[in-house]
Image 1 (tube, rainbow, N blue to C red):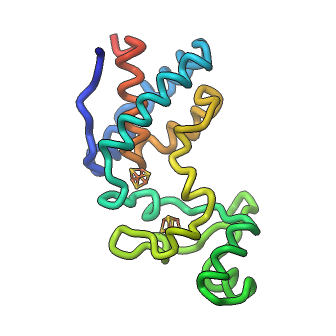
Image 2: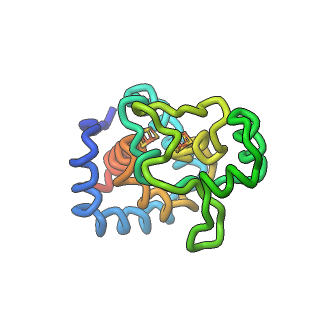
Length: 170
Ligand code: SF4
Ligand code: SF4
């Protein structure tokens, strides 16, 4: 089966993110012409492969560089475990971003301790769902995928192997 050499090094991935930017957008256009359901099936297999091969507890890059969206439900759950009021939590731990959404403030995330989440069981939905590769409709979310390509080794390797499988590289 066609494959590619996995890369986990975050510095290298960041560099390749810059270097491959044009190619990634060309591949986006190519993917948009493919059957979305077929691409979802391939991506799902690749996602399983790379989540098994990459240990998030040795990476934590998403918790270091990305601001997390939080919902009212998330806040309810987290304040129960932190034993604080919603007002206190919102003042201490959250802010409104440029798009007008409430997010966890401060980077790296203040709940990150030794590359592990201190509120893991109650973490926001966005953290549970990241990097969103298990969801249907991969070809409709490609701008987000390209954004995450240089942040998350799982996204990087899925996107690169997808290029190889679809023979885009050649
Ligand atoms: S989801 Fe991606 S960026 Fe976040 S810890 Fe796991 S491999 Fe790293
Ligand atoms: S709440 Fe936990 S999982 Fe979410 S960004 Fe912070 S440390 Fe990471």
